[in-house]
Length: 199
Image 1 (tube, rainbow, N blue to C red):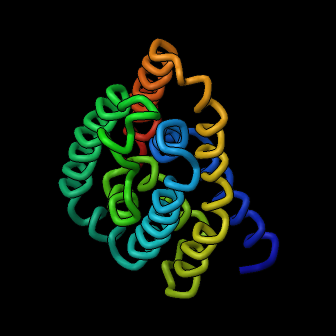
Image 2: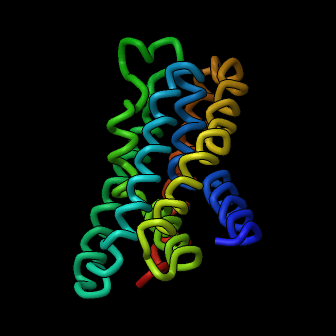
């Protein structure tokens, strides 16, 4: 890839990972309920999972979806069901002072695995491969995955930090319920723009 194309790829990776979506809304809720430090494994899991998903999508999963559209439809159905369950968990999260007893942040492995049922992660990965690695060669696909690995953490960490900013404000039970309810509603709404992508 030429330098302008690589620069465009990194810009694409940053913009798509910093904008609102299931990962970032969950990170904001986690930062608010558990704090930044306890949310770090969640963030590292997102970075790892998204990079791996992108790499494997370019290495053959796109061809599988092209050959068997039913697989893509099944994945989309499972993704929606899981995200609706997560929205319910966010809406009913325990107060910040009770999280140690009643809840815990998403682990590295859970966050990495979550990318496989995250519609936005699939949309980002498949779009990046289509645009920046149309030949699906190992080198170009690896470069696309590496771009996400490099820029994703700083992009998504902003959301976890924003959650910590409102943490003190959430000491009020009423405000906490409003915040968690809003985060859950936004998580559900975030499904809308990605459901129509790629079929």
